[in-house]
Each structure stands twice: as C-alpha cells, then as structure tokens.
Image (cartoon, rainbow, N blue to C red; front, top):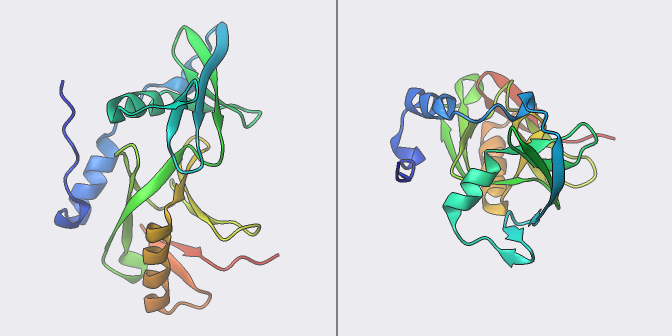
Length: 186
C-alpha cells in the first residue's frame, strides 16, 4: 500500500484528529521476546535524524517503519524488535520530535494534537502527558510505552504562547481534560 501523507491538522475537527490518532495501529513489540539479539548499528540523533552505520537514513518510509518497532527496555536502553530479533539502537535524547502542533478549543476543553517527525499523531492527555523537565526547560510528550517526543523549538514556542494567553496560575496548558503545569519546581 503506498504511503498517503496525513491531512493538515488545521483542517481537521477535534473528532477527526482523535480518530486518526486512535487508528494508528502499531505492532505489539511489548509482547515479543526474541532470542536473537544484536546491534542495529543505528542511532537517533538529538534532532530526530536516524542514522545507520554513520549515514543518515534519507527515506522517510524507512524511518516510519523502524519507528513502529522501536521499544524502550527496562534498563532504559532502546531496541528495534521483531518476533525473531532484538537489535540495540542508540537514542541521544528522545526517539521522536514533535514538529507540528494544532490546538482546538481552549481551557479544559482544549485538545493539543502533535505530529511527530514520523507523521504519527499524538493527542496530549492522560495517556500522553506533557513533561517539563527541571534540569532543562525542554518539554517532552509521552508517545507510547516509555517512548517520548521532544518538542521542536517552534512547537515549544507555540505551546508557551498558548499557555501565556490562557493566563493560568501556575502557567500551564490544558489538553484532553488534563492540566499540564509548565513551571518546574525543585
């Protein structure tokens, strides 16, 4: 089946975005326990670029395919997993980058939909919380099973602007009925 790019988020309703995000079916990598292990000789750089043997992977379809079998291990390492093989992969920061944000509604009714660099859609909420680190101000979005997306700088600025416009105290943002404070305290 040929790859069909997702529609522009701005043109979709809340229900349509939620339906698209829910429809993304991924392999059950958490259920696989392959005996064969090795090194994929792959790395995901801080900017979200995937590399194999030092060269960037230039085909977006390959990155999308590999990202669908990515798993975070109990020791916080990462692996590409199939039913027959588990190959380690180096992740410099987060395996995904949130590159686009669409906000619908406001306050507790707001829905924040993020498009990742792999074209997956994630709606922030109780299953996909936003995290604002104390050690560095960079925000992260929980994607699935311990895998996170770092918010690209323009997306972070857009999110901060929305939060400031909302005027909550503490500064924060609502999505899918959950409030995410942006201030971090020691």
